[in-house]
Length: 274
Image (tube, rainbow, N blue to C red; front, side):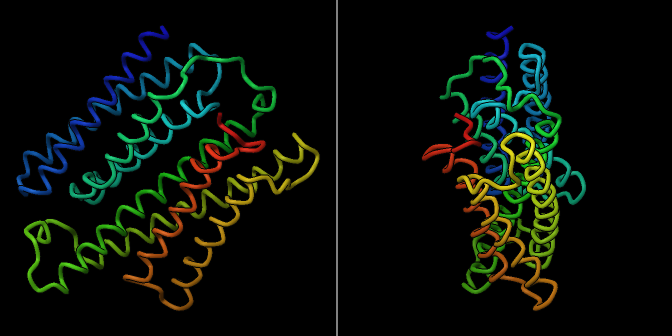
């Protein structure tokens, strides 16, 4: 079973790589067929990816988000799920060229890490774990999608100002659509992150005897929350939109990346996925 899991993960990596290539070709050529090929590949990759998670769950006997390898896989899976929902809802194939590479990079990184199944840490034998961790990754995925849309916004805005736009200028959604959808994803991610932090405080009380330990991941989660709270407040009160909102979204996602990857690499504290 373990070898089957790794073989399927390699297949997922290859399919996401092909999906990335096809989305980029679709963006460059503006040919609908390449976008359709890319979407079909992404659905196929998601199906196989889901199978790897279920196999891992069966093999381990617990929800497989307990170490760095598993968490990267789940992060990639949640990004692809959210992306395909958005593509289905809004028919924005060009977004795939900016999002699926993130899923590919996460799987590629995961494949470089130890993947053996280990006994479950007693700390994770809690109902809080089954809610807290998956919600955090869906929050991260929402922020990743918002950041991708913000990059698209900045590219399009620069193309408009250049007065000599490249061909793919005509293949991106309007600035208004990109701005609105980016904020909608930030709102979703911010709500999920808020719930995640609240649940985390109760879990912390049960596990360590206090609501807050000020360890690295908690601290950086709070910093990320403040940045996105500022953006949500700025949007609702001061009407933050456009370029400023796009840069703020990217700043927020950088803190999310450090909260997840940086803290784990440089010192995960009580939350380390190492």
